[in-house]
Length: 90
Image 1 (cartoon, rainbow, N blue to C red):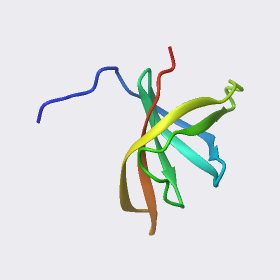
Image 2: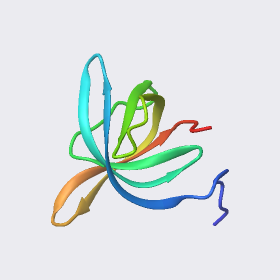
Image 3: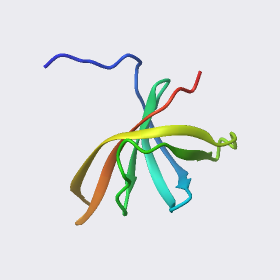
């Protein structure tokens, strides 16, 4: 299978807040790269709609991102959403 990633991914384990006018979620960031991040959420997030992202404990101001894919998976005996969010940290 061809690796189509543009940037290396780094495993992570911290919390982020994803929000917009109709959404306010705390999510777990499981990996991060210059081009985006992958999160675990108990709630779905609409695809292709820009959202604000605040990373904790990094304390960076909010950035904009776009959820581009979502999988409903079983993790630790419960179902959650694994979501890829495209952004630009540079």
